[in-house]
Image: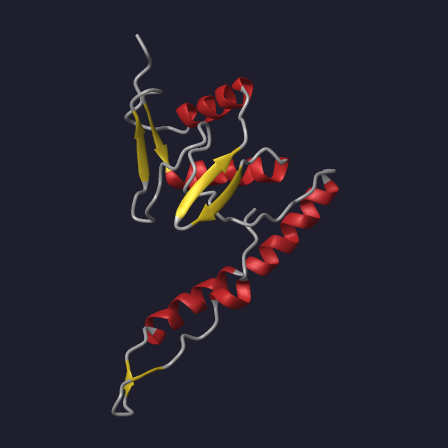
Length: 156
């Protein structure tokens, strides 16, 4: 799973002050409801339970840094989701619709397995290095095709 910063997610927003000394809206009222939802969901307890169940099953849970996992196409080393508001990617070559969240989950697994490419940022540009083997590409495409994308149509 993604390495969540639970304390950071529920931290209060910083106060915004106008030049005349009055305080400006900072979205804290809306965030307080979100904070309650996060705390009610008990993510910390969930992660502890997940670790326990994995250990009993002989598996390991590895927390992963999520950097770039939601931007990079999981089966081809290219940026497909440059903006957070892009939720789906239509691949004309493979004839599939790729959901951003499913794609990011696959990339998190690749990072945990040590097969996620190296990504560096220089002067605002991303540089991707690392190869992806054909069997991995085939496995990922099978997962994406089976994920229920309504716009997928098999090749003739």
